[in-house]
Amino acid sequence: MSDHSQKATRIPAPCRPDDRQHVAPRKMPRQARAAATVQAIVEAAARILEQDGLAGFTTNAVADRAGVSIGSLYQYFPGKDALVGALIIRETSRLIDEVEGACARADGVAALSGLIDAAVAHQLRRPALARLLDFAERRLSFDPDSRRVTDRLEAMLRDILGRADLPRQEDAGIAAQDVFAIVKAMVDTAGDREEQDCAALRVRVNRAVFGYLRAGGGAGLSDRDDAIAPRRADRHADDAEPGRRPQQAE
Image (cartoon, rainbow, N blue to C red; front, top):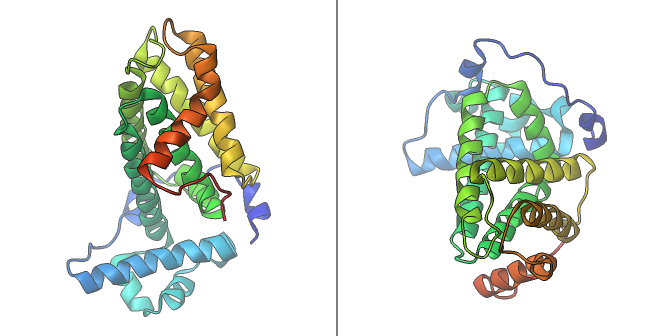
């Protein structure tokens, strides 16, 4: 199934009470060799989803792509939903790590733009996979896990929004929720449209977020600062990673 055909399937199916049993892995690897096998299986699942969509996503196809027996796959994953769950955990963990790296910047403007960079990269680094996982997360019973991720991201946003170089917001909690909603909506919509220009999307999201903060805050970010915020963030990123430049997603 192509990305175009999958894109239209956005309405989640009702969750069954026993969905969590099908999403959880059967067991966790305890040795390095077993962990490498699990990593190979999960990456094989990602590549099958990217190339063949849900129509070609079978446990036999994943085992064949990973170079393991179907019995080895079933030692760790009871079915396709468990594979998808492992992929969602892997990709979300990467996002959290990148956002935490952005939060380490002392400058609030750079930290917030770094968070936006991480969200854009998360969606457009492997766009076909990101769209399918978004769909799967709505279909499966991930509510408690999704809430924990959202809470963590909003907590990091509250920390960033409290920094001196950003406009003080009347209600930091509401502002963090609003900024999270703006970033998520714009990035997810760009993924649905199959955008590939990371740099252009970053500029648009920065404009929306910093415009919201400037409109809702008091002293802090000026019109001029708002206009140059993305450039300031790029400068901080270049200092942290020499040679890094905005580029399109592959």
